[in-house]
Amino acid sequence: VQLVESGGGLVQPGGSLRLSCAASGFPFSSYVMRWYRQAPGKEREYVALITTIGDGTNYADSVKGRFSISRDNAKNTVYLQMNSLKPEDTAVYYCNGFHSYNTNAPRYWGQGTQVTVSS
Image 1 (cartoon, helix red, strand yellow):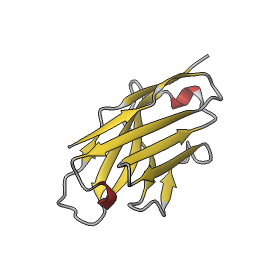
Image 2: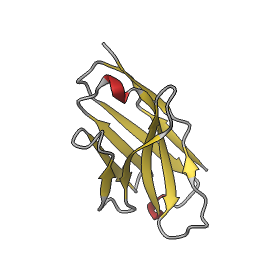
Image 3: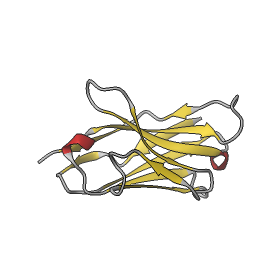
Image 4: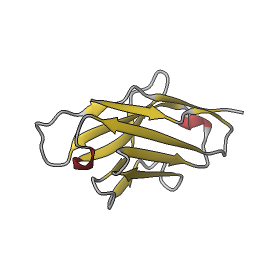
């Protein structure tokens, strides 16, 4: 069972990145998926959420209008498109999954991917 993030890197302010999170070993299409991030010296914070079939999304106010979450259940992958990036978006980004209705089912975290926004 694993979640593997990729797509992070160094980007200039105003630039874009697309993060991916590939899932394996669990019923991905039954899991609500979220992105979180953690900046140095700060607590992990929620970024975005997408429902099991992608018909609903939610965003933190800090990224609303700039970030877009999507998923491809055929590929067991969730994405985070990040546009108009700011230095304050610099953080390690993590994906997280939890079962849509079974509260006893395990929750999963990826290992994170570093995003650095700097000129």
